Length: 203
Image (cartoon, rainbow, N blue to C red):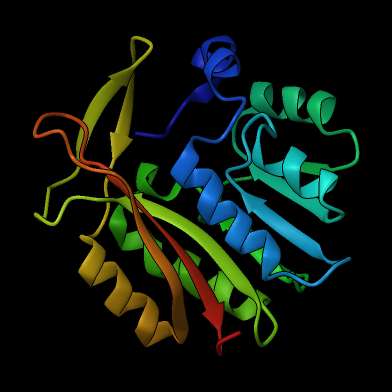
């Protein structure tokens, strides 16, 4: 099952305009660690709000990738300075070096078996000292893949536990520069989220 944000694009537009406090705290750390000017790749960019917009306002060139045509239409309106392309994250061929990559609130819509390949591709595109801003599921209990409903539409979710994800990133070559629990699991459908800033070779 693929995440189909085309079906909820108007509802998403209404709620996805600003970054909550902890998300914003991590994003500021990411921004402050990047050289200016430089290029940033936003995988799963959605409507361009708020991440791509803040990146361009901060002096970065942005390339955004998403599978939702309707969200990309919004992104081109919201962030006219950016470049936005239709593609699947797991099969997108990253052929340019970027100083930073964003994988925020999108990796968990893909089966965990695909996560390593995506992270390896990101690692290869970064220069030494380049940064990845990543979010993933926050439950310490290994949950099987599941589906849940957002605005009445069914979405797929899957992720490694944080400790397994960190170990995987370490094997690839990443260094964890910052780790936060963005929101804790609620004991029901919300499995929580963690956020990390990862570097290639340290900063």
